[in-house]
Length: 157
Image (cartoon, rainbow, N blue to C red):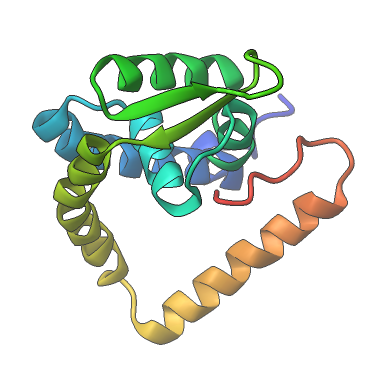
């Protein structure tokens, strides 16, 4: 059988996906419990906190989410008063999204727990290993950036 030497649990793309999903679920346990946010909503408010007023397309390109998920997240965040949408001056279909004061406060409340989770993960490796780890991540991004087949790199991912 051709897959005898293939083990999904050893396959790098699978291992990376599982780790990323586990980290996202762990973080979601924090901001979901305290603020009722989903992974997509968290990414949207975090992106807005760093970039100010932006479009759905800008968020989608930079937070590694598909456009429908971003649109749903923005709609829910707007309904809860965490973001505001402002129609464009020349074209009302072009909407600018930004955090409200309530959204800024929610992020301020969430960040300490998120940083604690990050600190726990970072503590699993020494500074030398982390430097090498981040270098490997950047090298893997470079390989994918040079490959015409995958989607373009999400710059905040």
